[in-house]
Length: 370
Image (cartoon, rainbow, N blue to C red):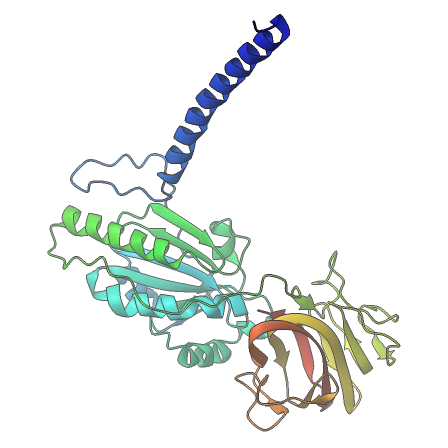
């Protein structure tokens, strides 16, 4: 005969098992609901759509220059169009990585009612020069309109704080989609397709439907990589990665000495460098920049002329690691203001990079990594 303690234990165990079974069914149902959720719900274009919850795209404001268009032409082109507003700047590597998708969408959908407007909102002073932006447009195959938002008035009208950022509005001007940074390309294109479908039905226009998406290889970031490093004392506030003991000295010419040791994720200028809000300028005829980084890609943003000789772990940069802008052994001649890719590798790793600079007046703004 079973004693009372054993009976009690069995009964208690059965109650617990039954409870766990019920909880399991509940959580299983919750998981299924979560998996069925989508970020962009397709709407039947034949139904009247309530747009009261959507904001209208603001007017373009304070535009200094119109590239690939005129104010009058752009105003006409915007009527009844699905519009993708791409807020970018040409020396931002994250912006540049999105451009193959945006130019492909322009090729594929411009005749179906999509208008892409590049809103060029500069981070640095040299990016306000229309000639520099024209060169960038040609380099990246940008044929759609680009408006130069030099005073950041359109940026502010969108209440934006990021590069890059994509807003997509429907043919009535309501913003239906918003994406910050890189990625989300398939989702973005599906939104474009859906809004073009809505437009064609609303306007009674025949449109060839397609569900295929552009085929562009997406850049794969390193999981652990050095963050963006700023050479300007104002830009570097609260994220100082200058390792030199001399530190930032606003507005002054500083003689930076050779460091005794190099710390990861910090840069070390050597020689005489003038400290600006957004950059450092080499004052001496020669100078050096040292850095211990972790990434598979290294880029620099520079202005003015200079001859750069690149060394990796104490040896001249080899073809195995040479970036796309290295054209002559381990040297790089910079002249035009903008972004230069100096290191490119398929896999991420840690290295000590040394850049020997010849040319007083050479100016450097940032290191960026991938």
